[in-house]
Amino acid sequence: MASDLNNVEFMADQMSGAGEITFKRMFGEFGLYCDGKIIGSVCDNNLFIKQTEAGRAFIGDFKEASPYPGAKPQLLIEDKIEDGPWLSKLVRLTADELPEPKPKRKRKPSAK
Image 1: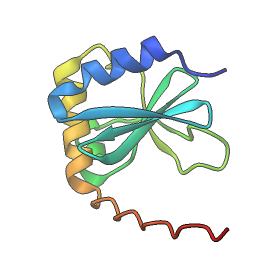
Image 2 (image 1 turned 180 degrees about the vertical axis):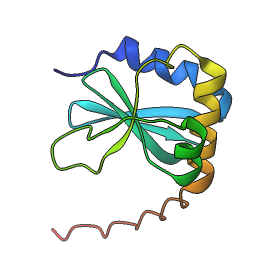
Image 3 (image 1 turned 120 degrees about the horizontal axis):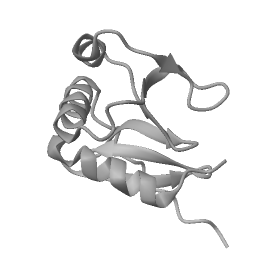
């Protein structure tokens, strides 16, 4: 089941205190970004945040799950989605610990 855009927009709004939150459709689901770094995803209307030491320490007792088959387990956020300040703090801690995105390479023009 694909995620509902309204849910994704709500989740992004809840974490907006962390920085510039954007999302992009990926394989029928959504990737979540904070200040250009991919910090998690929304799959089947469930919120997944990448695992970092700071994020795990902040949450304390956490639940992890894979957003899709073959994916690394991530933090599954279930009962705190409506707590904007808490969610923003988790996203900020996560984004601060993740590496900067690699610059995209320019594509060579195709030969005709």
